[in-house]
Length: 260
Image 1 (cartoon, one colour):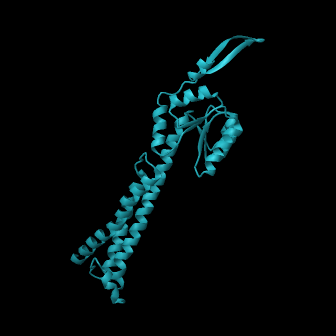
Image 2 (image 1 turned 30 degrees about the vertical axis):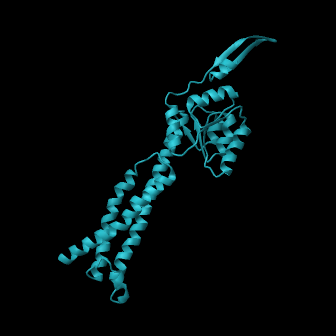
């Protein structure tokens, strides 16, 4: 039995009365690519924990083969529920996959519950989503899609806010310099007139919106990185770009208006 369990299988003892006749080896086949999939989750800053009712020997062997970060053996339904609550109390967002009735309380408690299509009715009803492919690593696609949506929204919002701040800073001194001569010190672009400044800003705004539509539809390319690195990257690219773009294009449009 120890040999079977140590190899990552579950031993099932066959008895006749008090006599042990033998042991049957029950083995779950670990998907070939599951280790690399867990590595991708790890690269995104997501920690994987296997929670199973198997004995510690079997759980340790499966955990090593699958490449999970941690495991919990001989877990009862209340143990799974308590572990998820423990992670949530520590400030983590928890996603769980499962298929059994004993997984139902934990699936309901998790921030994201994903049930396999082969799961019981109780598990399916307790989950937020049902994976029709019954693939326990489908969470990777869910996280990727969710992060891509957040990255796209964050990039567009960062660009829009930075763009508006820079745009108004560019045109307000030129627009009100005749009323408040002190603002001439802030007219760093030396726009030709208040009328041209406002027209240039309106034209720039009309041009930049169609430019952002393909970005919003296509989305920002997903990168397997932590939220902090993605945020810094978006701030540098779209925040700095949103600040610089109005100054360049408003001045170019102003120069074109003077010529015309």
